[in-house]
Amino acid sequence: MDKIRPQDLDWASLWQQANHNKPSQKKQATDWDQKAASFATRTVHSVYTEKFLALLAPQPGWSILDVGCGPGTLAIPLAQQVQQVCAIDFSANMLSILKKRAKAKGLNNICCHQLAWEDDWAAHGVQPHDVAIASRSMAVTDLKDALLRLNAFATKRVCITDRVKFGPKDPDAFAAIGRKKATTPDYIYTVNLLYQLGLLPTVNYIKLEGTLHYKDFNEALASYTWMFKDLSPTEKHHLKQYVDSIATRHKDNSITLHRRHVPTWAFISWEPTPDLPSPIRYKANAITRRAMSTKKSHRTQIQF
Ligand SMILES: C[S@@+](CC[C@H](N)C(=O)[O-])C[C@H]1O[C@@H](n2cnc3c(N)ncnc32)[C@H](O)[C@@H]1O
Image (cartoon, rainbow, N blue to C red; front, side):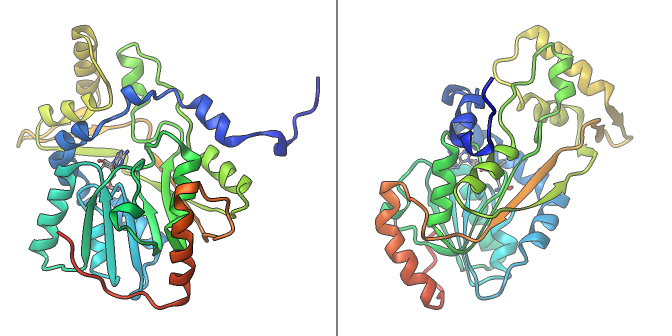
């Protein structure tokens, strides 16, 4: 058998092969619309935000592009620390929560764009920023394209978080309902692909809480149901039994769930380079990007 050398591996293709998440099975904007309110409530006090911000170490002069910004988990605290935040998400409800939060805090340095990863951001007026982030939002159909895109839209740094093994999904829940957890590719593909693109990624890890708190059992069950598509009545029954088995019930009806597998996110960052072979549609942008890297960033108009 021929020896396999690291340079023979095409990580972009390996990722495509390993990515069994067909577009039809991926969460759509409407799915995220429905999830928006509960996601916003659940993530506002998570240790995740604190740890992400500590690793990012935002600088007051930065302009930041936040892709898949959700309800502003990071965009809101970042807008309080940096000069300008541009928030992109394809879910209208997520953006609507972000805008309400920004208004409540009197923030006027966030602009929002309802756009998908796949859209032509430049055509919608999105400019390169000092730093581009994509936090827990790398559910893309083409990893290489997404990484090149982030690289093209940042001049100083790109920071993303990607799943380590199962990510936020509880593998015990899959086992409990008799489903095999789909082996979708995790961060190790991303790191290797970046290396293959000639970039030097730094990797840190963000470990989440082992316990989850919910206002009642139904909320806990809804959160677990979100992990699956098209549950049969039998699967629903087994899922309920599983959630019950890891729950501690409190006097006020609230629930604590104890997960055996604590989710970990890989925080991957790199210094972007203009020398990468950009996908054709970002080429024009590379010119703006080079020009931008030589001048100081400035505050832009609020675009609610
Ligand atoms: C898990 S949430 C993360 C939100 C936020 N970045 C955070 O860390 O809390 C994923 C977000 O990505 C958005 N998203 C998912 N797929 C997307 C796509 N193809 N284009 C744009 N946004 C997408 C969802 O609407 C959702 O707001």
